[in-house]
Length: 534
Image (cartoon, rainbow, N blue to C red):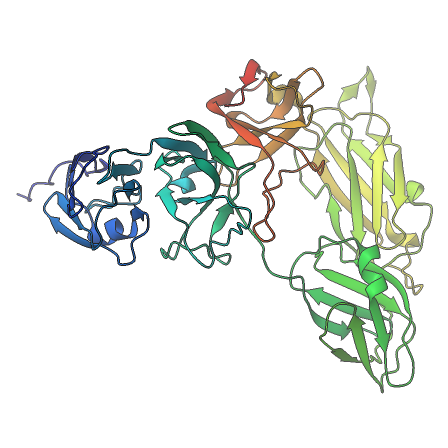
């Protein structure tokens, strides 16, 4: 006979069931210690990491654990002139690693009054929000928030649902931020932590309460840097940067110059790689293979040397990227797209070289067709990208083939493509297999954008819809599943949410999150959704 299983696994979070002195106590003995009683034993290391004290003491307190009781032994007396706040963050774990569901704060003073100001809110980061550090600074004229250097005075942690409370605050103006604190040193690390910045400062009157929401994101704080320059043949030079470039090509090329000890090397053409936008290709006049060249980039003090190439440019152009991609299934019935080449190509009659066909033996409009061809209009960027679009919508749920006749294509050096044809197939999204969400934004700012975020998949998909002048919105063609609805004011009109900037500081865009999760079903409209500003 085997030994008993020991019952079901313990998944219950720990609770704080008592505290001495009681929160809100005044005229407390300045030499008092603080005792928390938990519903079960807790992990000492996690408790020390999640212990926050305001005002911050010069020396960290001693922590003693005796069964379910935790004693906080302060080295400094409880103040008379202000409120002492001792917080236990939501990352405290029991011995089975179950976390406290939300932070808990105790306020004490040796004086007569307790500060009662409160800032509540939520961190909009899904399940990952639990345990994120939420911090507040009192704003002054010279305030410069830099949590990479020193921790703030007021801190807590977001709970299991992302909610947080900064309690027992004096009147004043506060700036809020949050970050992951993966190193557990209470400092923001740009290399590892998500960071959330506010859309406004919070003003607290005496004993008042207000609310704010924060949307954290991972920030790319690295400087754009050129790190590889090489000649791939006698006319092409590759520039590789350390990250995807967000600047326009016409802003970059005038800053480039190539020379040797005798003369300059003229740049005839330049373009972004169609597959990798951290790579720029230059087409130059003929290089001298016996010379070393220097590429100079205005504003960059690094000297980039490379040797001229003797390899002739004899390889013809190929298509390396496209939209739609082959086998895409959720394409609009009025599609447009693009085709990217690996080299600059010579302009030609692209409209007759590109064709879009429906190959189907079914009967359409009472007529049997083997294939139907649709007219395609092309637009060329003068280098390696070709955009195309249609005049008329396509049939829902059908598969189409986009084909390009490569026989006439030549690159800038006159080389013909080694391919004869290129094609991709894609399927038009059938709206009867999708649902929609319609409703009203209960705010009169016309810059609101409403977003439906799917939460059924590992990588959430978001669908954006601009609010109309009457406040209505209609988000269509949503796959069946569960969605969170949130909205933001597109202050800078760039069609995306702006997260703000730490240094120099700039606020994020205002946003709000609907508290209800919406289930979308096929062929069903979820109507009457109202988004209120909390």
